[in-house]
Length: 164
Image (cartoon, rainbow, N blue to C red; front, side, top):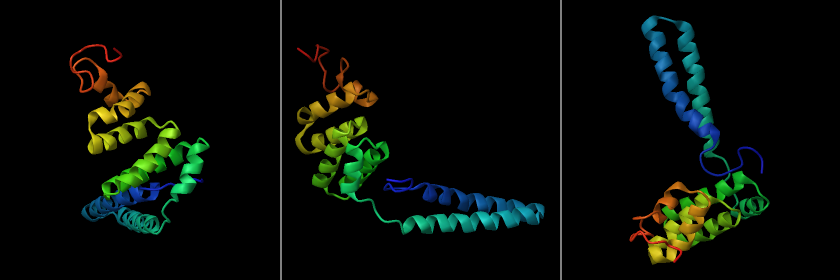
């Protein structure tokens, strides 16, 4: 998977949305100061910003099977792509798809996907069912998941040793 092949907001989209207001500010500065060079530069920024935004709009969405294969081969960008697709599926009301994609990312060792899978399971089945995923994320170093297991945390409310 080459650069820019992942899903979500590509580098062009974020830069495009930056260039539009920056071009506007530059244009306004050029008009106020009477500097034709600034006005010319602002037009270049506006055109580039619009082209980047439009170019990103027509990108093909990522293929989940290709991402899963690349993630299994150790491609970190593909793992992030799977997680992004999963979060999009969850937001669109497709929790089964989200769970399947998150499980693939978890197999690749993605700690953030462990956390997100725990959140998804918690929404469906409650905190007790999500505990293994949160524990896996905590053991992987996820800061918020670690808080669940410290004394007084949601998965350690009485302060007792959670292993006992």
